[in-house]
Image 1 (cartoon, rainbow, N blue to C red):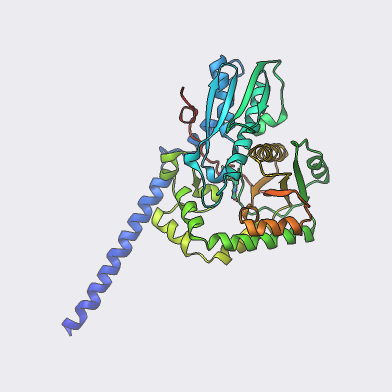
Image 2: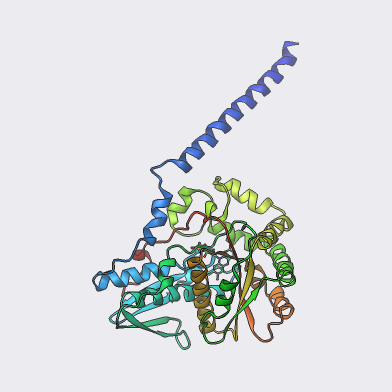
Amino acid sequence: MQLLARPAASRKDVLRILSLGGIVAVTGYALREYVPWVNYEAEAAQPRRALPPDAAIQGRMEGMIRYATLAANGHNAQPWKFAVLANAIEIHPDYTRRLVAVDPVDRELWISLGCALENLLIAARVMGYAPEVTYPETHEVIRIGLTSDKPRWESLFDAIPLRQNTRAEYDGRPAAAGHLEQLQRMPLEPGVGLHLKVDRSGLATVAEYVHQAAVIQYADPPFLKELIHWLRFDKKEALASFDGLYSACTGNPAVPRWVGRMFVTGAKPRDLADADVKKLRSSAGAIVITSASETKADWVRTGQVYQRLALTMTAWNIKSAFLNQPVEVESVRSQLQTALDLGPARPQLLVRFGYADPMPRSLRRPVAQVLMHS
Ligand SMILES: Cc1cc2nc3c(=O)[nH]c(=O)nc-3n(C[C@H](O)[C@H](O)[C@H](O)COP(=O)(O)O)c2cc1C
């Protein structure tokens, strides 16, 4: 009897010890995530602090670059380096931060540089410069010539530290007709187009291709491996690198890396794709940004238009987020182009917009880490 009872008792003990261990681990984990001295918010606020209006030249250069780094960029890989010259700033690609799986030809990398360019141009005008851009037509660099000018206030400037890619579900409210009209009249860049979809059938078409492409991506091991590499599953990971996608910014709880990896690789692609479509359905509308052709300069100009659009909506308290799956999966991209009657215009970005509370802000590396030294 006793002999038989023993294994049952010890199994219970083991379970008790295991669950106690589990509670200790989870509590320890939660404490580490929420302790006030690991202040994520303060670190996220640091690159978003106001620009000193009367800074000396070095401070102004540093400020413009800091504002450039607040731009949207794929996986928050921050694939940029900046060179400060006598009368110019250059934005260079940082190919060590390429996203080979999701962006094999560096299309989104150059779009990200275009987003940074737009922030830099706005900050430059506000700080008293007349910036002049040389696009990467012959050299792999974006050059911004800077000559002194009257400081010119721009309403989009205040939106730079506030803009974010808000990945939450939105509240379903339609956007004001006046705002939609203004979006359609927004100044663009040569060759770049905006295609607004707010009607049911247009959004249903977009949803169909988001779903199709999302299933392909979530079932693709190299895509998942790269995504996991850039995911920061808790505060400690996020603050170790100041880049990547922190869980809280994607609407997920903080978990140890092994749990997060298990969740990402174990989830059914169809369920994840359904969640993306649900987010699109909660939105007031979607916008496809197109370009006339596929050069680096076109991609940079596309990034500029996205950044301008997102800042414009931020100033109206309209949130936005990318749903780029159908432009990232090449076979689906051509189908989307045909289905939306875009003619020869190439779909480059897909953005949804609507109303929601803000989410935690993403981190940026400090300027010293993105400066090129001669
Ligand atoms: C070219 C490009 C592609 C992107 N694609 C996606 C995407 O498909 N899904 C997504 O949630 N975010 C996407 N993003 C948003 C970035 O992840 C986001 O900008 C980055 O994490 C920094 O966060 P923030 O924009 O809130 O500052 C993309 C950004 C850029 C510029």
